[in-house]
Length: 143
Ligand SMILES: [Cu+2]
Image (cartoon, helix red, strand yellow):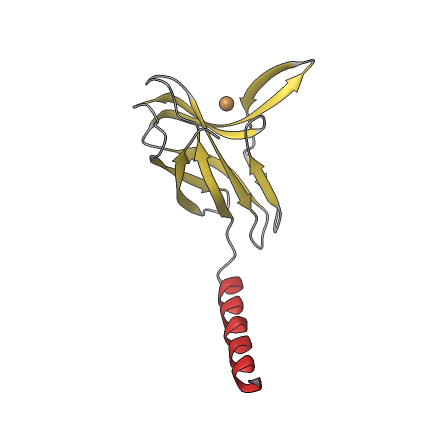
């Protein structure tokens, strides 16, 4: 039993080392967006960004389903909700988690080319100031 347990532990350690070795870039969790009722509307995408070993900045996003894509932040001022582009991009400090979620930061998809329907997934390309790019597949769902 001891020998088997030791072998399992060794395997876990090897797997953990392999993961942390290639874990320099920002990772993206649970990308999603709400359905859009018709084309030419706007939509927003949300996700969780987890910083890698260095500070990084999400500088732009792009999708074939959006005529134009911007990084936005929704803010509440005196009870009025408004949103505006984030001029310097979305900061992702090393090893910290940054949430893009309804009512806060989001990827704004302006001029949806074809309506987004529940159940489909939409590719979004993310570009970071480090030069890293990654394409994520956002699930379209109600919430
Ligand atoms: Cu917006």
